[in-house]
Length: 165
Image (cartoon, rainbow, N blue to C red; front, top):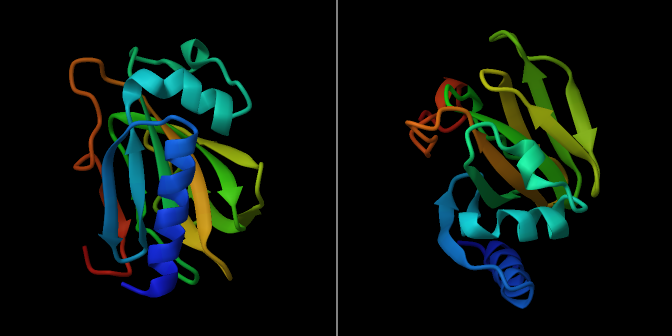
């Protein structure tokens, strides 16, 4: 792992600790970067800090929300993907990232999102997060759409993937 990646992860870990968040999972092994998963009990606190006080009750589709922080390396792309059991909201914390969305398997136009900008992704909507010139840090809330079978990391349908997954 590069020193820069290590530094970025340590900085985010420190920030989350200072903000009082309980990190329940940390993954630095993704080819595009990695993520931190925050305790679901802290969803409102997470929304207050990272989504300008968005009321989580307004976000709940099935009653369950999962907060995460994504870290995207420069010049890398997550897979062109969609989910059967969740919708997502992303808000850029640091860096500028690219986002491509579409209702079909055809990729749409690249949108650039700067810090403070956000995007909502519907269940089934194709999407791809892209690291541009610098490291991108993005807060994410999963909105689970099926209360009987909450979404997890296996709920990813990859249409295209740079890493052959």
